[in-house]
Image (cartoon, rainbow, N blue to C red):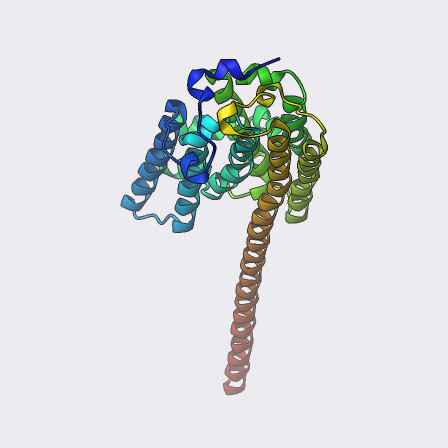
Length: 319
């Protein structure tokens, strides 16, 4: 079945893809507004904290901005147009928005920032801050951030979507395509949220557990990429008949898409692992400092007690 017709005549005479052409601006209104709102609200919250005399780590702001820009890069450029007709370009979009953007956004600690920036509503009242706290502690949040839910969802987002008619159905409309990309971003966020452990959440697993959660999902990503690379015929209806003007072969484009999916599954693993090891090291340092302080305090108490004992002996001698 030829799915290329639904992309409109503009797509039919697209010039061959090059990186320079792919990065030209082509704003998708939904993601443009979302990206600007994301930057604006975060900036407002940071300024609010600064005015109050509170500090906010620069690294977190940088991570958030990079996260938002990574979404804009794949959704507000010509990459988004080419992604409608080239499987390989679509796979770049998918991998960035589901695996790279969520990690960067989570390193920006948006929940912590929101909780610190929003004013408390006062006794007995419920404002936005109180509603957010209630949501974080809700059973719903406990379920959707639990590894028993996030890991199967992360895997199903690949296999159930691409290897069923659902993908072609969503790709038939701009709305369907946007919904799919929002889904990828959301799945990435709930999967990596407990693992990154920067923001407060219902699940705070230990570091070893977080690493196990991370590695539980990644092999399936690699297998998915390998399945696409090994296929002897095009598997996705949408990309079976690429526009002739692109000068590409559907099967070799699919093989490239598989290679991208396979290679990309390694990148977030490394980034998250580095972040986890660093967090672990920091928490061990804090623990060590705390026990040193306690030891010093106990030592001071012992010294004071000893001095008091000596003083009492001297007092007794002088009597």
